[in-house]
Image (cartoon, rainbow, N blue to C red; front, side, top):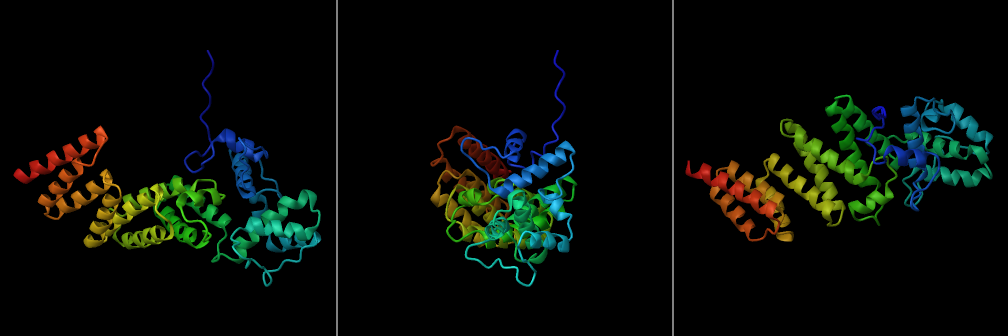
Amino acid sequence: MRAPLPPSRWPNERLWYGEGLARAFAKGETFDGFDPHGWTRATLRDEVAVVDGTAPHPRTSIAGVRKMATPEILAELAALGLDVSEATFDVKVEDEHSAWNLGERWLAKAGEPGEHAEFIRLAACELWRRWLPESPSVEMLDDLIQEGYLAQEQGAEGNTLELWLRAGRWLVELTPDDITTVQEVGTWFPGRNSVANWLGDLTFALHNATITELPLRERARRLYVSWVQRFEPSAEQRRLRYSLAQMHFRCGDVDAGEEACRDLIEEQPSAVSAYMLLSNEFAANGRKAEAIALLESACGHLEDDRDKQFIAEALQRLRATTSA
């Protein structure tokens, strides 16, 4: 009888890439024509090294370059013909938000760097992180999202939310103007997790935290407003609008919450979640007749049998409490 496989140490909860695919990409392979961004490959190499317990390469890994002192990094760049200093650190190029891409521009100036090419790219990422902490690169955004997941693994949910709220602001700031949907962000962002997955994790964490943490509600609402305004309508944006409607209610802005729910229902008459959110709010505020009327109207728009059953059971509970 074959012995059971040992449990995987691969961090599936915070990485979009499964272990097999990540190991292939870390080696420089492609899959079905997909060639990941260079930063993505570099992060996956570091992830594989952590899982395998191997020491990071001092010059061709993110962890290795991060251990270097700034003068040491600058000296090695100078030896490659690159005169870089904090005073002249130039990232103000049109539509440039990637430190990795900045490193690619340095490569052109270095001539033929050969085996030092990866070090140059990683040096650009690390110097940007040290010198421009308030002007984040997309690589720094990826790091921030991962720091949030690591804090979550350690049980520090408060730290996770602080990190992710900042990441949410950065996402709006960094996304190029020609990217208009959440799905398009996913193809642009070279992160270890997909933007859609992370947004789902963040909205879930905010949903739970704002049940009891009142000061967090307004911060969450402002973040949702910025996302909804930034991205054009799509399935992902509708989910963000639902979260915004919920946060309107939690902030006590009943009119804004009702308007948001009715907009969602008008656009998609079978939107069960919007019907339920609004009817629950009505019922909680002594407007049970309106809650019942709303769910009764929903019945004429639903096609899925499970949705119909769900609404029917909600109606039954409402009517029971009304007659009691």
